[in-house]
Image (cartoon, rainbow, N blue to C red; front, side, top):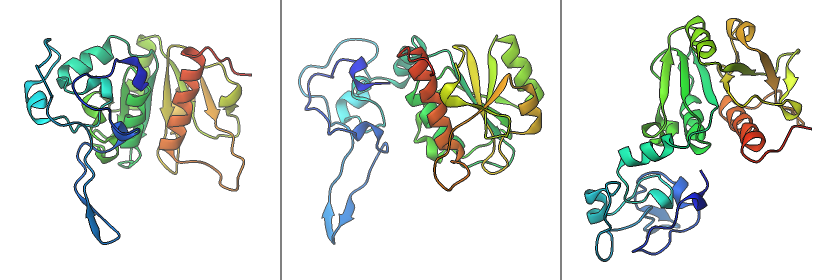
Length: 240
C-alpha cells in the first residue's frame, strides 16, 4: 500500500521516510561505541483525542511503535484489517512448505505490502514467522495439507493457478499477460515447485536472469511476480 493512500495523522510530527518498514520495536543501538536512540513510530497523541471506532485508546495514550504505515497510526488492529479487506486485490499467493521453508515469512510480508487477497501455505502447517515482521496479523493466511486440496479450492474459486519457476518449458513472466484472478505459486527454496503443482498449473513462468546465478530465492521471486501483477492490473501496463 502506498503511504499516500491515507491522509497523514494529525496531532504529531511526520515520521522519518522509510520508518514504516522498520521492526515494530527497535531498541537502543550502539554506533561507533556511543549509545544512540532509534525509536520507530510515534509517541502519545498530542491534543484532544480524535473520535471514531478505529482509534485505539492504549495507542493514543502511550504511542504507536508498530510496523504500520502513517495512515494507520493509532488504529486498532481490527480496524486496519477491516479497511484492508475493503480494498484487497484479486490475486492470491501460495508457497509449498514441505521442508519448513524460511522464505515464507518474507513472502507474507510482501503479500501484505501488495495487498494480496490471501496467502496459502501448502504442505506443513507450521512456518517461520520471523520474516513476516508481524504483517501476518493483517494478512489472511490459509493452510492446505495437499497440493490436490489446494488446487481443488483454487478451481472452485475460479482462480488460475500460475506457477513461478524456471523450468525449461516455462514462459517468460516479463511478456506474460497475468490474469486478474489468479494465484501465484512458489516452490521450496532449492527444489522449487513440486511436479504435482506444475502439472496442475495453467502455466509456469520464469523470471529472466542476466548474471551468473541460475535463480533468485523464493522470496525475491515472489516480490517480482507480485509487482508484475500490480503493474498489469493496478497501473494498466500490459506485458510487451
